[in-house]
Length: 379
Image (cartoon, rainbow, N blue to C red; front, side, top):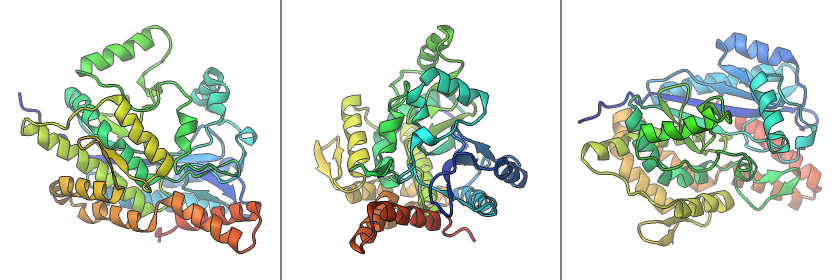
């Protein structure tokens, strides 16, 4: 029986870190007035995150990528302006270059307090930020079918978004260190394969009925059926420092899902690969970002990421045209040309060191770079 075409609405959530403009360290106890004023100006589209030094924004349900961009731009601008009035600034990066997780305070929100109590130090170490992209897929069975197929592309999306090369003052050698922290929690990583929505729900119900979960919001896979909305929520991204990069990855995500839907309508589908192979690519994206290529699972060889992204662009061009986001999709080539936030953070660090800065001074230069880049293009 044919499935009705999804709405393919889009929503973007981003998490930011709040830094002191003078010390450039995180602010473990920012004024409550910042969140209150942001909520007043955005109809509560700005919310607290797990740590007091974090803040989250979420766009409205948008009909187009352009609409999502406008809303995200507005939200970023509000946070920049309100934080700036208190001598603070947000940085859109998945880790802070030198802040310590042991110095942070948990937000006084019951679900976060519960998380801290249940997960202990594994949760308290979550000094990390990410970006989530919701795409409207109303049919339950279709949502699971697309989840199964979309798993293949998650490492490609991560490789284009990396922004966490530092941790507690150390160069980690990874482009996305964030996931090494997040993966210490249960129910993270790549999603399982499910034959149907009913099978997915049965698995969730086992955990709920055993008293291990309240609901499916406590499942934190890289891609999940949202427990609150009729959407597929892609969560593998590091938060992008530049607004245009974030919008580009959101555009590619929605176009990939539409492309997979088109394949289904033609009685075709993307091949399902083993978790072992998918996880190998996930690790390569964490370790190298876009530098060393990913495993082309059909060919069984390592292929440079620019070639793989060109293939994805060809695959989804029809969808980008239909959804009016060709320019946003093609922006991925600019990311490949100049590097992700992780690459540019490392370049800023190395420039400062070569100019005679100490390690601490060089890390401060990275934070200055992140402040400027986060606010780029908001006016």
